[in-house]
Image (tube, rainbow over all chains, first blue to last red; front, side, top):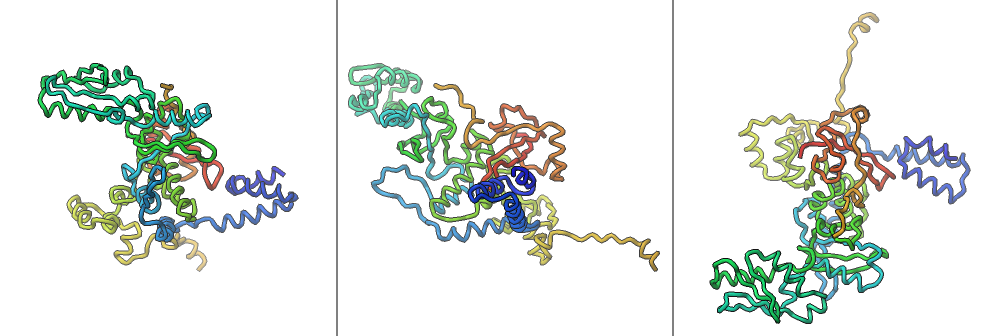
Length: 386
Length: 80
């Protein structure tokens, strides 16, 4: 029985063979029947392979374009729903394909190690350690003391207790984060004195602003956290991304923790991970919108965007601007710029691609126009026959 | 602080391995291409840091594919 499948190993993809195997077991087929099925499957498979010269790029563009017209054109903001806002629909799809440096709603899904997901209290605690907290959030007052040229910080004792802060810890972080400042502890909170000689009002105001923004806990950039349950696992959804710092935390499961910033993934996890992330993000949008686009189109696009080793968008700054032909580039965006640049540098267009040939009314190198004919004329033989 | 996370264990990162000279030539022969026609991976890519790649090396990547069980993919290392 196994031998039959082995014979088709090189002719059919492994997944198809697995599927046939599963179905055969359910229906209890005999080996002769299995062989018949495999023959039929192979026939269908070979027939549905894409033929050389087929313009797959155009097909992909159409496949995305047609259902794209039915997508949500605007991002809805839900009021009163406790949820981290994530851009979805067409705006997100455009964001992915243009490879924007920063997504409009950066977010992370942080998974936790199983020992930290036993009860809700621990999960909330871990979440509170991820969220960035500034000094302002745990203080009730920042007052300027003109006489001493100092900023007096009054801490909110209720918040200190709620979030489990210790005054000594805050003092330490303040000493590290605020340079050239003398930090002293007092009964209400802290007294900050600038050790530099700028005791004037503007200097004090600047110091107060700086002190307010000091991050006393959490990971910089993460502004919102929301613990949720997803597929039986506890996930902390975060607004804002900082993969590098999150990976350092001992409570989280770094294996499955992902961000939606493609460039961040490319720089921290490498280009292959970015390729996978493009696919996942794309499929998430499509699934959310209830659209059914063949996965091969998504695979093709993600491959195209990452084949140069960097994440490149489908824009004039990305892969569309790297075409060899001047005319092809000019036909996409900013034509004058491309033509002027090409004439200054004396570029040569070999007219080998589709667009240029359309422009000069020649057969395009696509489909049956792709192969050329080479005739080998055997002169001697022709002569002998005569 | 926990010890540094090994990013090659991340769920998004597939298996990377470096090909020997002969394996590289057989790949190029199989696809009938030159080295510069392969897709590219940067030398500084974090996923291949531990392999200590040199420019011109071919990296074999074994991915989970949605249309096949495993898919082999090749990238050539370039400067960057």
